[in-house]
Amino acid sequence: MYVFIGIGLPELLLLLFALGVFLLLPLMALVDVLRSDFRGANDKLIWVIVILFLNIIGAVLYFFIGRNQRTK
Image 1: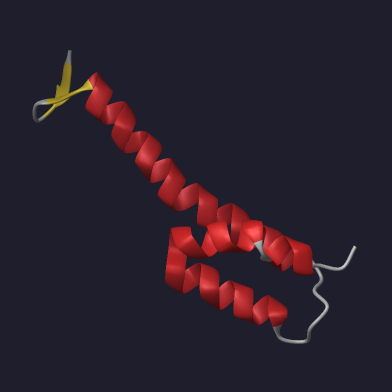
Image 2: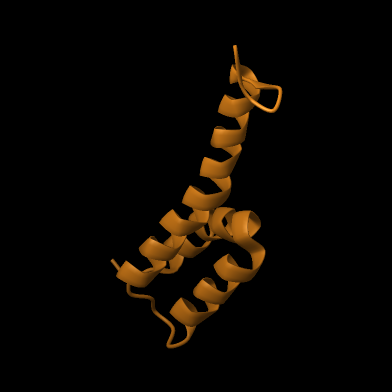
C-alpha cells in the first residue's frame, strides 16, 4: 500500500518514528530543565543552551548527566 510518492507504510512509520525521536526527546529534556531547580546559578541556562544547540546529543547528555545536578 503506497501512501504518497512511492513511500510505503514501513517507510512512513520509520519516518514518523525518527521525527518523534528528533522532536520529542529534546522537547522532553527542555521541559524537564525548565521545571527543575539546579544547585548552580547558571546551570539551568547552560543546559538549555546545550539542548538547543546539540539537539539529540544534548538531550541524551542531560538525561545521563544533568538530572543528577538537580536539587531534590
